[in-house]
Image (cartoon, rainbow, N blue to C red):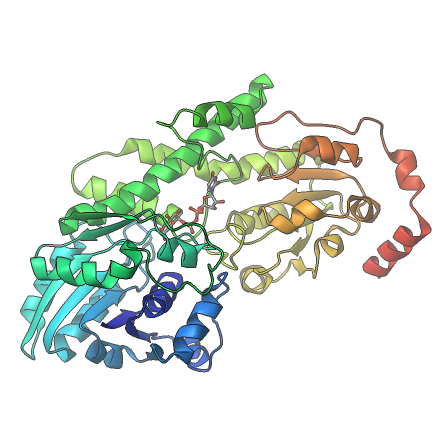
Length: 474
Ligand code: UGA
């Protein structure tokens, strides 16, 4: 099928590339000309595992091209709208980009178009779109509007698209439903060549849920808000564990064994971030408010999340006594691993708070340093975790990148000024860290100190490690 995708962000680019991958002829547009230029020249504007391979394979096969929104609108019978819906100061989603696309479709398209909302939008946006297209279309356009929310997670978006648990389509005509079933047929039947996931065992056919447009729109906001609620819930349980000396990991495990609760999204930490949860919770509160429902539960979810950074700074202060003048290593800047995205990343709020208190920061992230540098240029960005930790009074783990699991502990021990790790993601095994001579503080778990104070150990550093450290510091 000829399909257009408007917007080449994380969602749009993944959607376009994966739809091409399963056999459709896709035209993807991007209004940011720099980004468009990159895409047209085969350069990826974002880091997302496997997406570059799928884009390249589809481009080479001639099933994916990039261009202007006007050309995209002329191309596809089905048009996926994947433009941004950032938060306005009052928490509402800013729908001006969606309106802009609707205006252009009304003005330029003729014949039949199925207009599909993929961007996360407030309930009733579909109805507005429908009305707008009916009132403003000039060229004998006939149209349907459908909602098809995405449930992709950054870092695993290609896999989530090709092997989803569910596909939700909100439609109000049979033609719209049939078109969407046709588009997703290869995924529904799990019959397509999956170059990236050759070894992927995940071949379970997804569930297709067909609803009205409004319900589909609500499913998206309700799902994200529910997941955010789970995170804030476990973060409060973590606080309680810290107060009474219990272990939140065990509590979460015990809760998660109940299939009605489930174990996912019960990892405590320094709070949820990214471009979805914070804005979607906010937008859902506003949607409810405007509809006369006070969703105070979600207001609390938001407040708990906002307090996570403050609490982590307090923990840091408690360990260091005074933050001013201290050298701190920040490991991980992306809002989660396997992405270079720092939008609403907890790392940024944390670093701002620490800088305000007079700390000196050296940060490391495998992918996100360039983007973080734009937001916080005064931080020193390092090439690896050891360089960031050189001479540090404490290491703060903010994003649970897998590479932090295979650290050379001895090298690290010799690099730091004080062997103190504050793990904001509970990614390390306390026992292992303690055995390597570190004092280790995590979230909702008892702090552990080394069995024997390794002061002699530090004095005994091998000449080799010392030289390495001196090299780093130089
Ligand atoms: C989220 C949803 O998981 C997707 O289903 C949805 O499609 C997407 O938003 C969206 O609306 O586009 P994403 O923001 O990519 O996906 O990332 P998540 O993996 O959900 O993580 C969000 C935040 O929650 C991260 O900061 C992560 O560190 C935090 N988190 C997650 C926790 O603190 N604890 C957990 O147990 C899980």
